[in-house]
Image 1 (cartoon, rainbow, N blue to C red):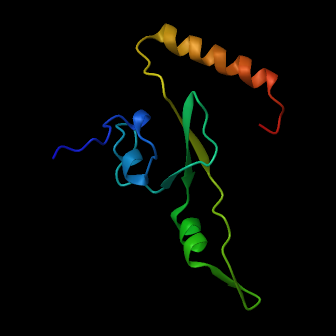
Image 2: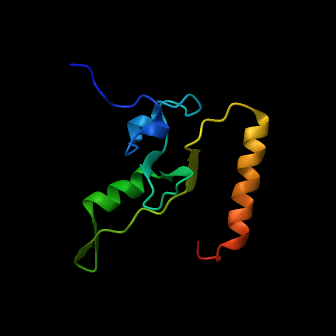
Length: 110
């Protein structure tokens, strides 16, 4: 039976580390771990770029003062992948202008 998994990363329901490594602009092997961010928009997918050591500490825990803690791995960078396919320079310019307009009207917390 053929798989119904989308081949384009923009169409996938969830994006994994392996999906991001499949992108042509990501070096393999990568010194980073990629994980989908909990906030995603209608216009784009947001992926956290994480330090693998921090991810290990988050999953295994760290002993501090006799208590095991699970500190959240802070993102080093954020990778944004637009959902809409971009076919020309004009599309890119329009998308950036739309993004800047939205950014101007949102509170700084967002």
